[in-house]
Image (tube, rainbow, N blue to C red; front, side):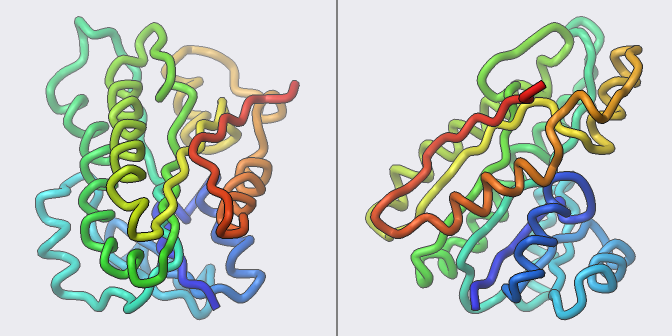
Length: 229
């Protein structure tokens, strides 16, 4: 039975991936920002373990994890959690920059650092769910895109560093996907939100599980998923 550590399992792509892996009997360790959220996730996914730590405060993750038991072996670490706040460069405050960089980039790096020994033991897989904004930055997307461009760099460096240890690293770049985050983006853009126009989270989950299940003779490095309608 494989063990997967998943961030962002509460909604959207993360929830879709967690449901797939839970349904087939894999062991889940679901990250939660606080104890209340951990309790909700444990109820939603019976048998899953939780790992509590606020991704918005990466400086305290090490302290938080020191008071919990990390799994002995991890077959995959799935970085799916993320935040977005749009705004022009001339209007964005340091607080907004720090929040997106912390959640989307610094905390994934810190969580990876803590889980790497278990990943090396299992010759496991790290999946970074990035964004189309991790490849191209648009109007009012500077802070979010910067965090996602940085996430691409993190994944690429990690892939080179851990190849000899048998750890696989995949970046997935979904286009706009139906989710609470997408609804928020539309509100910030002042646009009407029609979920039917965007990618179903289940479709992105299919690509992620495919990458996880690929035989050991191959590795998906970068995977772009675009809306088909």
